[in-house]
Amino acid sequence: MSKIQVLPPEVAEKIAAGEVIERPFSVVKELVENSLDAGATEIRVELQAGGKRLIRVQDNGAGMSPEDARLCLERHATSKISTEADLEKISTLGFRGEALASIAAVSELVLKTSDGRGEAGTQISRKGEAPAQVEVTAFPRGTSVEVGDLFFNLPARRKFLRSDQSELGLTVRYLTSAALAYPEVKFVLTHGRREIINCPAVGSLRDRIFQLYGKDTMEGLMAVDFREEESGISGFGSRPPRGKTDKAHQLFFVNRRPVKDRVLQAAFNQAYRGFLEKDLFPEAFLFLTMPAGEVDVNVHPAKAEVRFRDSQNVFYLVLRAAETAMLAEKGLKEIYPVREDHGGRSGVSERLEWRAFPGPAGPGSETGALFPPAPEAQDKSARPQVLGQFLNMYIIAAGEDGLLVIDQHNAHERVLFEKYKEIDAQKKWPQQSPLIPVLFDLSDGQILVLENNRTLLEESGFVVEAMGGRTYVLNSFPDIFSAEEAKETLFALLEEMGEEEAGKKREKVLATLACKSAVKANEPLPKEKMEFLVEELFRTANSAVCPHGRPIIVKIEKSQIEKGLKRPPG
Ligand code: ADP
Ligand code: MG
Image 1 (tube, rainbow, N blue to C red):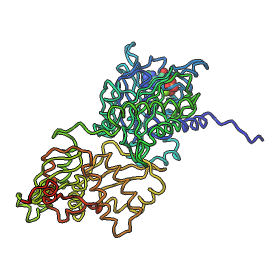
Image 2 (cartoon, rainbow, N blue to C red):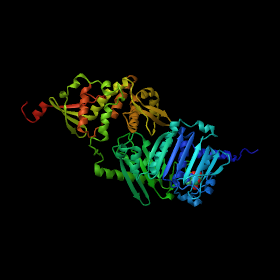
Image 3 (cartoon, rainbow, N blue to C red):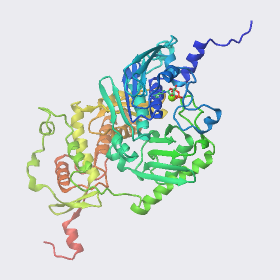
Image 4 (cartoon, protein in one colour):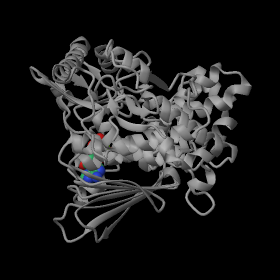
């Protein structure tokens, strides 16, 4: 008897499905791509249990006629290409005609659609290999696909799914990139009853980044815009010296398709060499456009990778695009930009205030109760009088017998350190959970440190969950930080915890938290904030050095000034 058998179609079907559909987010990706291909301007994604129980994607795109609806679940049924030659110039996101068939093979699928022409819409339902049921149903123009009980007939695959939160995180990550690529489309994501993403259509990528990531991220970016022959690169990259401590912030798109690609990464990182401190990586939101014949998108089952016809050329294209952008920046702003934002409304000065009082609100936990002022604090006249700021990093104040030059960062760090020590002693870190899960990859070394210090980290408010492989998600963190800062702080903690002996670790953690949340050098501060800071500083017991042992104040004696100016002492 022959050893080789041809697999029965149901088995072949499931194997094929397994390649395209790996987890809930792959379903979301395929369905959203279909909606985008159908020209939708509004796409709603609903998940239950991270997508394991239910995924629904509804759009207001072109929809399907009853005849097309009957065909769309068939394998290799596609309206997007029809000849082999078409494979050479794909302009849609989908083209294989596999996604709906694959999803239907491993779930309970209900598709409703209408092209707005006939009287009513069509509903197709199918569970696994069972025959599809077709009904007429009332439905507005557009399509809704509901995928229940994913992998109900592939228990092995189902077992490999992660926690709801982790699976949700992957969908969030994907939808964020789709939203970046299609600013003109409105995206909504809900998980159970919770709305996770809601970004109405906007006019530009800049607006979209602002909408999704906020002002701080946008301020750290510079525009990239470069054309050469028929190819172009546009988008945003970090504005040196700003950078990130990990590479997770590099998003590349080729013809509006999010891709992972080493050539693009390598070129972009090389362009920044010498412009960023070591251990920092540039952030990227970069869109390549190139003729469809220059790039093969048919090399990966989930279309997450592409192959360039001439990758050498692509490398130099990215390199030149980034370099050109940086030169333009340098010419204008000398590469080290100073914030123009001086007003009292600036994010920095607002943060300074609330960060100095991170105690939870409510009776018994007011600042006064949590941090009783030192006795001499009542006597305001003894405080140095703030005169102004020098170089956006030093506070100049008049002391009793001389001028004080106060390092604003070190001073704030000291003030916060003392406060954090009190909070820590009472185990009262107010925590928050980010709306959009904070994902990152760790090195082996970092993973080890994380595992060895989990308790301490959790006591300090950092709750980290493993998502498989090197990927981790930060589920909650002290509410003195924004999500972005929390991640940077976590990285700093992992670095320092690796080196510190056990006894000193706790202090070190607090010092790092203080350092990361303190105002930076190079931040203009309005006068009232400086006064507030100086007052707080002189209230703390140890105002001479910062928690890292660096000095905080330099004093220029009155006598020194008199001597220099050849004035008689008076
Ligand atoms: P592909 O996207 O590769 O063509 P799919 O299996 O994803 O294959 O979809 C099959 C076909 O069903 C598509 O070519 C398209 O004609 C139709 N279709 C799927 N989803 C939608 C949608 N949301 N709106 C309109 N048509 C759709
Ligand atoms: Mg498709």
